[in-house]
Image 1 (cartoon, rainbow, N blue to C red):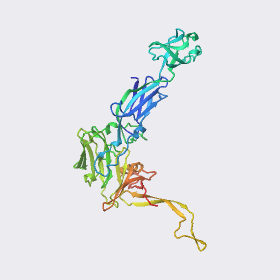
Image 2 (cartoon, rainbow, N blue to C red):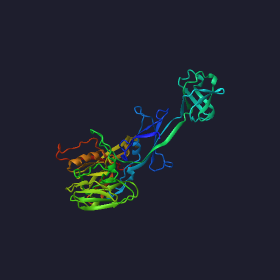
Image 3 (tube, rainbow, N blue to C red):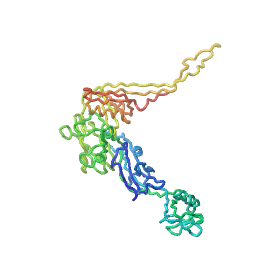
Length: 479
């Protein structure tokens, strides 16, 4: 095996972080050398698998290694799944996860570097090289060490005319033109055909998910992604969310809180989601059994468990997995808008939500496109006169975009830090129900914030936030 693996990603990686493979190869100094990275679905056999992507990479100038980051490719293979939101139970979200294999290979231009003295073969010139591989009729290019100064007739394009054995071949150059038989040279196929090995080394069953882990950014030292903690195999592992597990990190939620945290699941295992009160008494539980490996969005909000108090949630399975506990503060304060929230995709691919309990202002922005047309009028008693209701300015396109100014209640410092994810999330949904429990809005929206401030209680004792959203669809208007 010519390939050596220098570095590779961990078993499970966020798709929006660098996913870099670094390899070395003993043939890297050959002419036309390229490292080849071939990406396949994790099928176990690539003879019939569909090739997803293939990269040919030059050796890095400083090390000679082959380096390839496949994160952009992996980002195109994972996405989010919002279809189970409002169902108040776990649902399959395996679109957020992808498993793949990598075949590591190489290629270079076929050539031989002969060092034995040239010799005659009848009237022509014989070259010796162990296992040269040429056959009669091959077109070859010969490059001599002195550039053809001593033997100009041998320099350049020639034809193999005889192959005496695996170690000798003759080209159509008259021996009488050779003045210096000891000069070394290189023989290459004229069509620059290559030696290519696509699967010199294999890496199998790597995984990515629709997340972005940023603990290494703006830090004194970089931190590797803790892959093992998110594989959900052992006690104390984590769910795929930016909500920090532990008692000091309670996220605020309220009635109808839409909270769905992603979990790496394994086929046929029985998973149980358990809600506890703050005295560790079981309030409720739900179970599910995935049919295949992947990711499920696990509901951890209060509504599906009929909870009206502070609580925490833990997920377990029948094979020794037990997640860390995730704590929630139930907000039962008197609210102007009790059933109104924004649901957003957090940076690890889970769905979190914020309630906006204070006053809401609904607005509309109107745009019109018009032109000024000629007024034909009419002739009455040999005089021009207008026509009733005839238009000069005519509106031919009217658009209405609705926006809402939303206001949160007073919040704790941890929620203030969470709020920045809502402002920067690319996927946000507005969910509001009126007091008669007839759904008014459940729709995609766009957060219009262009900057934010993360409040600290050292600087501001009472913290609340405001945000303006725009509905992602315009109201249809007839013409």
